[in-house]
Image (cartoon, rainbow, N blue to C red):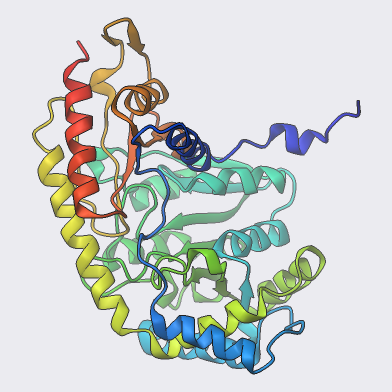
Length: 397
């Protein structure tokens, strides 16, 4: 039997996908599992977008697209940045990829050399560190906690910079915490980074439209760093298009060209039909965004109302995305019958096996004191899941 490459042996399975798989396996055995593990809206893609895809098939969009995406789709992304974010891009700055995950991988693999340091505020999305490791970069973690609303400070950022720092990567609104950086906080980051001309800033804004505190703010708006900000976005969350697998970047032309080159050797262009559906989403689907935001805000408040009275849970009020990220360290070192809860992994397995609720341990996001709860499902499912969580936690002594 042959031996696998070191890079794949060192690569971890996504714990969100792992928990979803375990939930699915229990469901297949007839267990009534409520899975709150995946970051996926429960809506189906709006009809106008589905019709756009059908028309694309009938119109013959069945051939290889340009690697960076159809020119009219890239133009619509340029217009989106201009109209919604007041940012000026050209089509040469836009690369469309098979999901935001590939977009991030393109950027990191195109710019990070072995030994380069990448600043990663904690908590972080699960794939950031794995992609950095594939590039043989070194993640440098900047801690936060529920007490700081899971946000880092400009002072922390400044102290983390070394001569080896090549990149900062973060999301706002944040997966997994739901925290949203304000314009003032982002300006403070920009002021810190302004003198460091070689540091690339990757701003993951995939949850842009699920924002409960007002208009979305991007670090790309600040002139002193604009020329090295890469905005990562896509249509998965905002338009309930997870299965269509479309993400994109707005980036300096030299980075966009490198990503085009990288993507050309891995996958070539994203699906032609999914690209046409995305064009429809960006030009015709905006009514859906209001409903989406209102629904998730209601669900957030519903879930928080059921969780806030549970002893030992430390909660913040997330201002975006569709996650709650409570600190559950109160339960560590305790028991539920013969089951010992040493960490968030143990707690999630206990809640899955005893309460039949699928969650994700915070360790996956660099914060082992927490668990991630996705509230991207129906109200009655959330109410029942909260009830089960409360009952299970009450048995831990």
